Length: 95
Image (cartoon, rainbow, N blue to C red; front, side, top):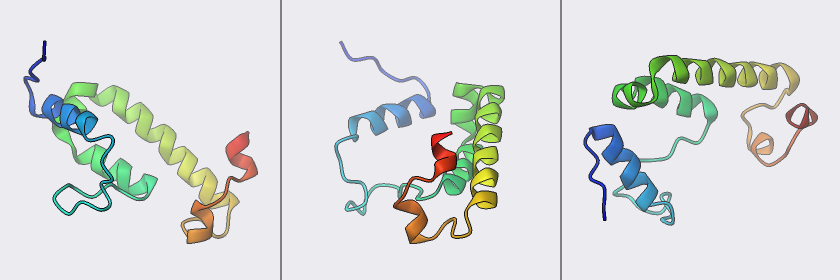
């Protein structure tokens, strides 16, 4: 039995789950996936239906936590955001 999503956000989540095996970088008809945590957080903050579904308070707690991680990374690593940054794991990430 298939459950029919009743809201736009629920349909969007269901569509995403159905496309998990799809290489979204190679498909031009799908929305682009954000490449950085900063871009992801900005999109999350702008997605009002998803905020309603997940609750504003829960999402805000998550966003504050991730912004702290970004600030910690920027303070610890001079080349934050460069291609080299994305291909390694630093000691602060293991802590």
